[in-house]
Length: 336
Image 1 (cartoon, rainbow, N blue to C red):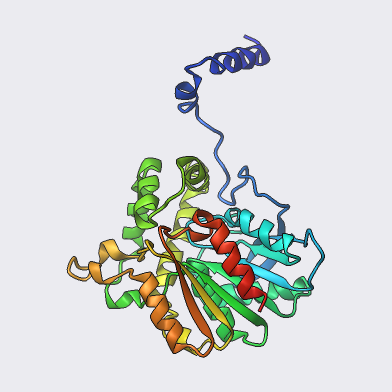
Image 2 (image 1 turned 90 degrees about the horizontal axis):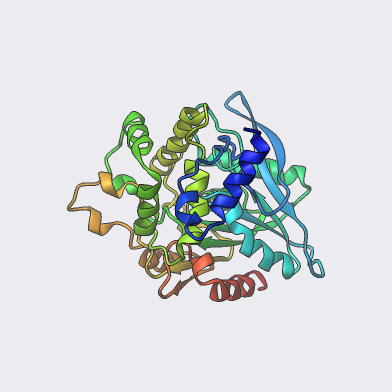
């Protein structure tokens, strides 16, 4: 049968009323491990970096102001389980308010190269500063989410003359996970992650992150993780991903947070109790972990210029779940 005619027949068949149930079972072309095939909302460029002697490429979006430019730049730092494309609503808010917005994928994530060795926050910080130097960005504001909050703290501490505001959105790293969780071998984590199914991952996100989003808004996160499983390079992606857990575990930033001098705002979801590694902690210690809103409020009081805002009925993805309130807090903070 002519393949074009066959395609037309299939298209007509899927247009029938019962098509959605059938279409769900149709295999989709896999993404590459640098998310080739996964759409981003703005053009993506690649910046070369060398980490531990390995030549890599750092993906980023550089989006100009859509209203009168105010001469300021905001850098968005993504979380561990999310491609930087999820920042799209925040990019629109910021560019509409006159900001230039730079949105990198850190090495090991999204459309950036997947490293063969370990990850370190100091190296990611250095990469980010190198990118901003290349883009001729001097001072900048940071808006960070989840793991990106840990990186944001490292950048603010290492390069205090560059950062003007630090906004930490539902950050992890507000406690030292080593106090609760024993070290877990990389091979054991790789094995567990490899066994995870798409449905299991969705449930994991919904549980760990107290998601309030409709299922269709969660699906891109599932796709960006599981449409790469059929890639020949998937084992390399998996090891790069697991390296990020080990980085979070081995390189706590909570002890540095009180030393951050830049104006800092925590925006927390009241229902966010995410705590990396909790399943590996002794059962008696698990309830002590993940009191993130309270931890942020306590840390803010120890800092010279910080405050914490807690948004009710929201989880870990607070900037997507409470967009109007989040935008109001973000623009008010950055505008001071």
